[in-house]
Image (tube, rainbow, N blue to C red):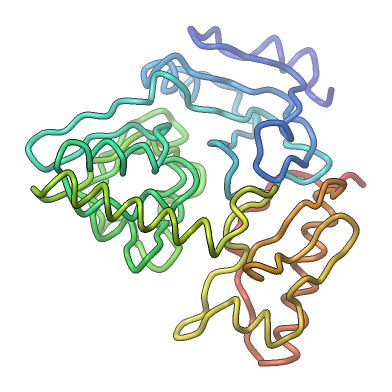
Length: 303
């Protein structure tokens, strides 16, 4: 373990739970990556704020949700990895507004609101991951994105202070958010509309069937690898550069949807990152377009 016993002893006494030297691969969609020095699952928002206010100043802190859009490098993540759990799973409707905790799955929000006759949030069924992750990257699909339905977000700064942020304060753009990386999203209020439950449920069914046919959702993957350049499709650029099915080690670009990277069973994080960089290189050489990673890469290399 890289965490010194001295630093370990200086961790705040919290109501949640610390675990030490924790393998992260089992909780990530790619199923690769090293360990976290410490994981911290806060009991609730108050517990999270207490930790941030009282942690050692030199302690690195990061956040991992369900690991659907994340590549953890083989050397692992130093410091404390925060994983929001049961204390951040609120999901309630007031009129047409949906109050939701950051640990709630996007798909759960879509299914629950549809059942309650609230429309406009069906697109969330196609976004892997949690509301916290969706806020961090302004996630979207099928022509909709979080920015279009967001009333406000709740985030905690590194000093443990909670902020309510309006969309215009967050600098939201395509797959991007200006809120500092060291702020932790803990919840949101989303805007829906009154509608018919059966219509919303049928729309979700259609969207999920489309996703099933066009994306390798049953593989060890991480969602879209690269963001679409303005006016262009990343998958088309990747295909034109001859990268459909391209493989490095155990990492492969999907034949079904070539903007998805796959762990074919024996990949390392280094294989996957190297494959992504090779795709970027070939696309740049072929089209002059520099692809931007949509998958978040964190941690240290094994070397």
